[in-house]
Image (cartoon, rainbow, N blue to C red):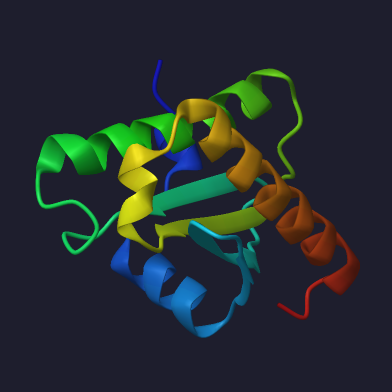
Length: 124
């Protein structure tokens, strides 16, 4: 099962808005850039650069694992609406991480970003 198109960020202008008008949260392996949107839906973009993983199948594996986490949150109705989130892999150690460690690293980022967006209102 994939994340529905309504929950993906694909347009260049949306990506530029996140990069310009967002706040960042970091963990040891990932950086999350988050911004409030007007669409009343949660949207996600996962970025794994070629510097992190040269082969496409390695980059896609990391992306699939992260997207799976958010699919499970969506199925449990635990996603915050009106939030755009870009998750960026920071270093090559991400390739060696077991799935459980990725979950332990991503969930605190998401919780911090969602709580910060709820308290910030429409200033973001």
